[in-house]
Amino acid sequence: MVSRLLLAALLLLASVGARAGMLTFCERPHDITAADQDRVLRFAAAVKQELERSGARVAIVSRAGLDLSRFNLLYSHAGIAFKDNPGGPWSVRQLYYACDESRPRIFDQGMSGFALGAEAPASGHVSLVLLPEAESADLAQAALDNRLALALLAGRYSANAYAYSTRYQNCNQWVAELLAWAWSHADAREDGRMPAPDAARTHAQAWLRAQGYVAGPVKIPAHWMMFAGQFVPLVHVDDHPLDDVYALSLQVSVPAAIEAFVRRQVPQAQRVELCHDTTRIVVHRGWEPLGVACQPLPGDDIIPL
Image (cartoon, rainbow, N blue to C red; front, side):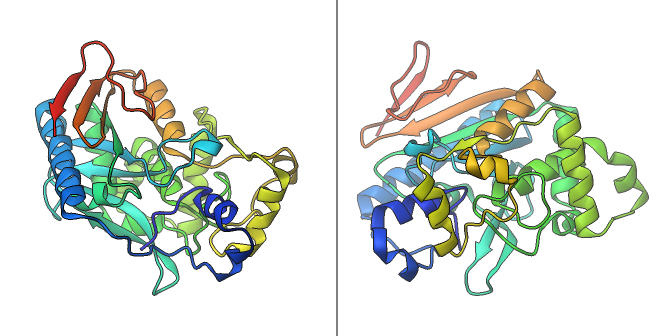
């Protein structure tokens, strides 16, 4: 299962240099101590407690995965958490890449597993965007409709998929397109009509454009890093406009873009950010970001670990 989203594969490429061709970029097992696991599980419990306390039934949830700081990104992977998910309370419905099948899949994962998906168990960040009742109901209906979830699923995965093409898809793009369908195609859902996958995605992308959705842009630090992507199995540039490639600026759906769009589209939406280090959990309520260092802002809650 892959949680290497966006340009994480290129980041790994930069780290390993000439060995890039040997990498599969599928999720590799990494050692985690009992203390690390206990800390992350307590962090996941704090996330679920905050969700329960909010009174919301649906949240867009994002986590920090690999270190994407050279791309000025903290959060890499987004999904949708439901209080009434059949897979368990506050399980996260998300797209992931199934390495053994070489294709993307839709997967429900408990919050503990979602938090454990981060690369560095010594620290972690989770962002929650809590939706009001009307938007929550539409999104829940759409996301838990398996036919629709699959109709919006592309057959091919790319970590840096162009946001306005149906050639590839990454996990965050699936979330963005699901939001678009949920908030713009209620009549089609009620009539039981379901278009072909490419048509569903095309309609969703057109609606996102019309509503002013801004994907990324993800700034690539150097030309060599852009063109090295041809050697990385899950990174592609053939779906991106050439002008964007030459400008080292790719329109890729990232959690920050989704959150900014939802904030504009649904002004009543609320945001809660939680982070932890080895000694404490910080709970911050509001749209001002905490930042990588996990330093509390005035009024934030602090839970000792």
